[in-house]
Image 1 (cartoon, rainbow, N blue to C red):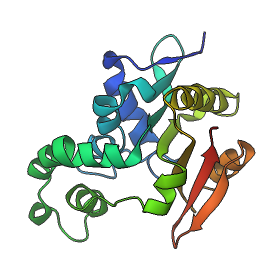
Image 2: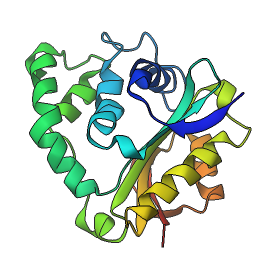
Image 3: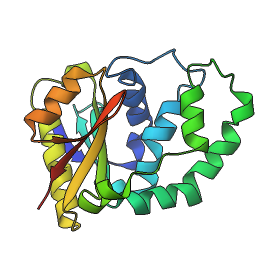
Image 4: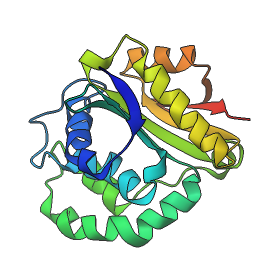
Length: 199
């Protein structure tokens, strides 16, 4: 039986796996990076360590098949990552140890120079999220249920709105977010920034 439930510490390996298997614009990125944990170390690990109360999973009774991860206060989360998360990863993934043409170069650069969300976005939509589901968990409403669970938790924490970034090469995800009521905030060269009010 498939259920939505809060994240548990024993889920970490499965969530890293989901991240990798959906990490190429929604497609499988397995084998793309020299370290299969690298993608999860950027997009899963810090949320599980720093904001676990905003992590929910789709569980089929055997293992998680998808997740949504959120941060209630993006600026606070970025600051916490800079204090406690990125320093460890910078030692593990040195810039000078990653060839410029390596597929993972952009992720290593992200670790060493993480982007800061513009003030005008976090002022109106202070929370942000990442959601990924394996193909077997898609198309049956589980993504919508995950989002509802996170929206409720963020609203309870006092957040007035949430934003996310999505690759333009993932039209299925863009359509999913629009169906949920997300609206476009920014049109960037390779991605969109979408937002949804919670109040």
